[in-house]
Image (tube, rainbow, N blue to C red; front, side):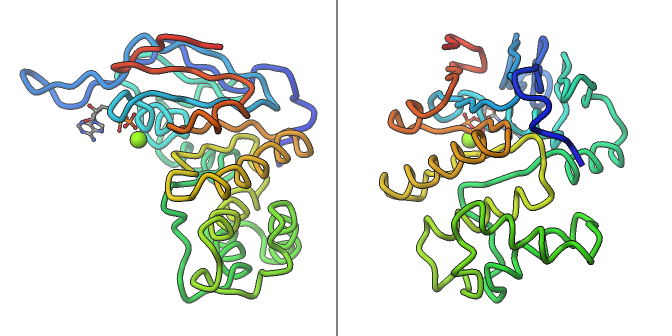
Amino acid sequence: MPQTEELRGETILEASGVKRVFGRGQGAVTALDQIHFAVPAGSMVALKGRSGSGKTTLLNILGALDEPTEGCVFLRGREITGLPETEKSRIRRTEIGLVFQSFGLIPLMSAYENVEFGLRVTGASAKSNRAAAEHALEQVGMRERMRHRPMELSGGEQQRVAIARAIAHQPSLLIADEPTAELDSKMGLQIMRVFRDLVSFSGMTIVLTSHDPGIMELADYVIALEDGKIVSHT
Ligand SMILES: Nc1ncnc2c1ncn2[C@@H]1O[C@H](COP(=O)(O)OP(=O)(O)O)[C@@H](O)[C@H]1O
Ligand SMILES: [Mg+2]
């Protein structure tokens, strides 16, 4: 299990010369180009940019879901690009947590079952799953409501459950693509507070995308993308 706390401050994630081209010939689209940055462990980074600027493409590459056309990505000092699929899948299951805009919970399962099922899918040992699932739900403030099904929860609560599912295996890196896009601004801020607490108390590193300026303010670093290139980094 990654010892996230011990890594705080060191570079945990690095992109070097990342380029991603979709298709070929006339119809080729350069979704990312000349992407370089390093993320210190225990920080929150927000990627901003218009629709089509390359945010999702970059998150997919950082999360070992996609390969760049050129360049490489290092997670905890180890190159994760160019690895065999089985190894990338192992890294995703152990070191990375993913959160999506649409929550992606299973409707017929309670909050607890969704998180526990997520752990089973990653192949975690059944013995400790219960404690891990309850701990993750506690971390997002949903332990009291863990017997509820998604439809009995607000959008913000559903997203908190989805975050619990994403962190139950204690990944060092949490990747969230537009996690607040389907929520009103109040619930969006609640989600951001959950992320901030994960960074502060668990030393987790979070990379997320958003359009919302209020969300950006809560990040430690903001990287702005335009047409697949980094135009500012603060
Ligand atoms: N699988 C794909 N095939 C072809 N083009 C793609 C694919 N995924 C993304 N693109 C293109 O890459 C660019 C960046 O897309 P995306 O990363 O989804 O942007 P964002 O998340 O910032 O809205 C867009 O021009 C998009 O059309
Ligand atoms: Mg996107």
